[in-house]
Length: 520
Image (cartoon, rainbow, N blue to C red):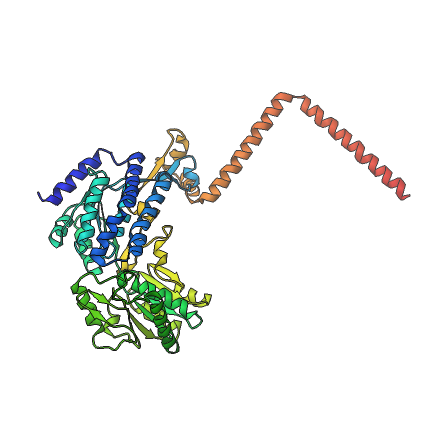
């Protein structure tokens, strides 16, 4: 039995005891995550500096604050998320209690990525714990300092009987994938995502794949170019461009390309007034292999700006390449670095057609003040998410689902969506032991009358069924009140009506006589 087998077996045994089901256990673990992120922020930041030369503010916001916000939201909303959800009922089931009850899946595997080593392990883990699961966390071996800190902190702060960390490279990952999990959550490349999915298929294990792709940014002619340049350059340089929803390339008109490059240079000078080599506000490429790959992508092209490669420090300055064509090697794969190709198009229609010919992106960015242009992109393209007039920031709103479509991934998470990803929605119908006359419609012997009545019950829409039942109840109450009234007043009720009729006739006759005399 491998170490992976032992871990999964232990977690299954512990899950079977029901220890993760109570809301108290879940809230306690989430509170411990909050405490861990607060007390150990400096350790996390130090590890990120060693792995990625991550600027302190980026580490704090993207890795720590973001995770704390997710944990806090889960703590506040958990009891509400766990509540059964009532569903609409037709007339046939109007007296039944019907609801959807979320329940934990069991033992889940969370496989993080190196570009955001803490966030991409902790955020899914928050949802897995909130949903009541046991979990194996597999940090990326390409960020070893972060992996070491994750291992130590999760062991020290969380319930080690239910939360385990499994470290290692490809062989250890293969061992894990041979085990049967109840869900696998993977963040990384499409190539590895296919391997994960193939392994999961052996056990019919559902997967969430947070992948990537080429995220396009279209710039309309009516934009404030400086604002656009600021936002796109920030999105392309945060974490040195190593983020799955970074704007991968820009499309704009030929006339806009030159002025836009000038504004990008102004934005660069504003962001990095100090030397790019000395500043602590700019990251580095993760390792030499990826560095060399990015260098080969640029090749012998002459950049409109940047293009400096320093292998010793793994520094690549923000690089702008203009007049790129669709068949260029830069346009064939996700760049995942601070290199920004610009491709010119005639108009938004050409941009939309180009996007539609490729794989569906994880994110799409549209910069325009024209609502018709924006709505064209919204209605005619498909992507995991869309952000209008900005980049990346839509991924920070926990009430929006974050995830891809097609080659950019499957499934989504953040906030309640992570809870739902790690939950099974159990359908429950709770019927009474009575009302057998209604049930008899489905019992033999069958008849045309039964069939017609049963069909009428089934086809009654939920909204109409409620109105029908309400009207029936009102009628029933009216009949009961009438019956009670008759019982209480008895024969005197008829006599009372007679006196009312006589009085009413006298009043009508007097009005008629008065009117006749006035007319004469």
